[in-house]
View 1 (cartoon, rainbow, N blue to C red):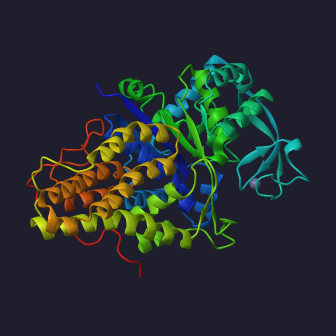
View 2: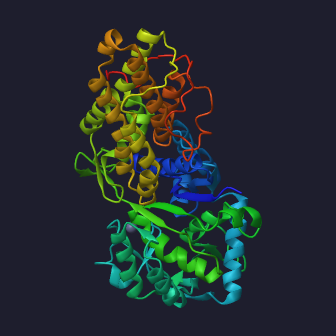
Length: 507
Ligand SMILES: [Zn+2]
């Protein structure tokens, strides 16, 4: 039985237009999923869309459509983008699917039976656009703390989730699991938030106010609150209470990746729901930072929202994936600028990786008619061996800490070393003076490129496959296992096929 790895993105709000931020989370998860598959894990990679709530109902009404018709249309913008970005998710869950709604209702009913969901009267302030209830103390001058718009005073029946009951258990859990929230600064935020006390949470809305949601299973006048509904996707996708084999195999999730703005939902509300249901908590919640654009916050009104398709059209999918993960430390905010993207493209991709592939294959064609020679002596291979041996543990450690940029640095140290090796050995001189050594040098170079391609694959799958193909390798790259990939395995006699440059000059 293979070890398992379950990773989730948040489910994205179906009415939003996917931008750089959404793609950042999905790409990061994709890299982890692909890396785990390459190290022998059985992976379940989940993404999806959050499709209920008042904003969907309002947008549908404005377009004279049924909410379901609107979400059926909008969900495609996400699905198409994930295809374009080569996101390798194993499942895509939509909260309007029956398999999800059934689980939400079953959980809601179970908590009600247990007394952890109970009826009460809600009085408070409500922001319609944000679909959020606020306490009087949270609001300034009757305005929404999030969007600044006027709040409505509301008094109505609701069901509460007894979150206060799980304050102590959650605190104990957090104390025992200092890695539960990553990065550690965010863990500290959550700790102080929980220490400050947890209040019971209103988890249903009157159907008269919000009709587009999952009906409460025991009260026809109530609809389940959209956040309570949405969080459950992480277990409903695994068939919680229905397909226990799948659920038992993959739950608890190994990594739940989110943006820092939804940390409280994932590191406080979600774990207390699970504690109430006596379900194990996820291993780790990883919160990443936000992207600014040329130093400014992205916003529709500024007109600076980065459209992933525009970047893909310019530099290709792989350079986009590479840039997002290489440019900024994962937990912190990053700044997107086209100038920085182009610098990375030229320095790291075109001049370094692309050039290494090109030079190596050109020399192999020139001196050995494109056939990888059989060699029994390879000069200075020890320094590569040392690098390659240390690579897997280093990258495993870095990716476990969501340090994508550092993981890429490690891979690039191998590529840098190979470029340096060409300068030191000067194959064009060896061609005249020492053909045996030349054969050894070129063998080492294709061998290093083979190993590098496997490591690059999780980050830039398309480019890795192109390198693989140009090297003339016929075994399946996605089926490779990094635990056994090492130097000296390049089959002699392989005919390489130099292709077009991997990272062509930008126009
Ligand atoms: Zn608001």
